[in-house]
Image (cartoon, rainbow, N blue to C red; front, side, top):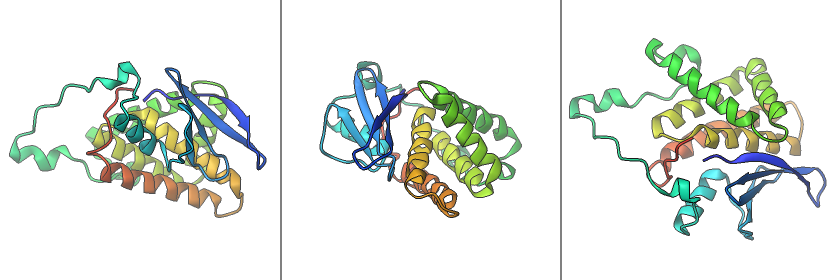
Amino acid sequence: MNWLVIGQVANVEGGSDILLGRSGQGAKIDWRNGDVRLVNPKLAEVFEDFLAVERWLVRNDMLPLQEAEPRPAAPAPAPESVAESVAPPVATMDDVPPAGIETLLTFQQRVDACLQQGEGGQELLETKQAFEAGSDSYLAASNELAGAALEMGVAPGMVAMFHISAFAAMAEQKDEDSLARAAASLQAAATRMRADAQSVPTVAA
């Protein structure tokens, strides 16, 4: 997906929204609630998350050229291996089979690398790592989201956008429940990702 954090812009209600860019396209995450708007092309429509943005771009044939070409379809698994090819939802690292730990860890590292790119990236990365270290619920939700992305072939850049949206929504109301709400938003994103798998474009990181 390759969206990069490129800066911040003042919100008329106060605070600063997060700006992201990709191949001439621009998007803005509302710091108050995590909603996403396209600013180039400029639209009045408000999107719930970046999955919805990607679907809109696909419907309107506006994906960047390097992302418009689908990856070759993987060969269908043999009937007896279908059940083995789809991993169960990942709640914690303890729930990951030994053979899959390196894959999940590697994917999380790629998510971290996506967060770290662009202006303010180091702060975003440190925020994610602090939340994962300080909250079992956020760590579980982060791993569940990464596991869903691995299952559905979603790029780590998309997962990074969900973390950024969660951070932005937390800024609206900072209280003792804000971290729990952020974790819940990641779990909801994992659920939507699985539900929308058939309609979401598969894009290389």
